[in-house]
Length: 156
View 1 (cartoon, rainbow, N blue to C red):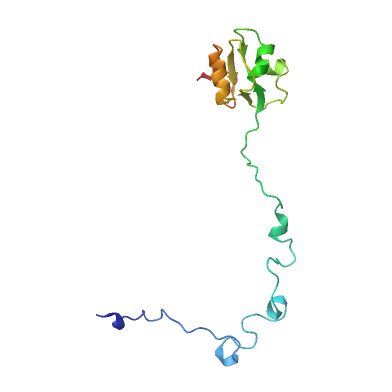
View 2 (view 1 turned 60 degrees about the vertical axis):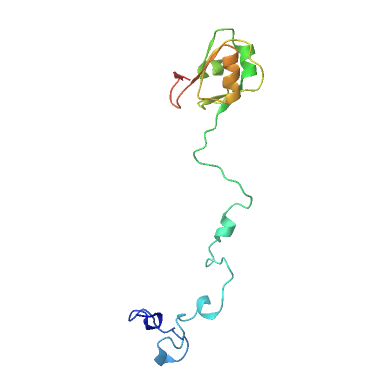
């Protein structure tokens, strides 16, 4: 067998339909466009959705995206813990709320590393920045990460 002996399977190739070439051709008269209406007459502008507000107009103009699963933390810097708590205290989200350092009701608490920490504290929070964890351990304290629904946590 040689290349010039190869041919497609029977029925694999069909002739192109020539629209608008008379009734006998099968796609004559309206040429598959139906009768009347915009589709039969001319072209519509790009993005036209039949009078419905086009997708391009329904979407916001400026870029950006906000995840539905984003966790909004109530943040506290380690520098503010110095003034509010004495040496050896246990710091929890509840005690932070009582001290007025956290105002957002049920939001999870994250400790950030801005400022200096000189007191040794045992801090329980839902999240810590790397610099905050380092400063807490350097001051002789301990950082405990809480799970989202709990107030007592595991040591890290």
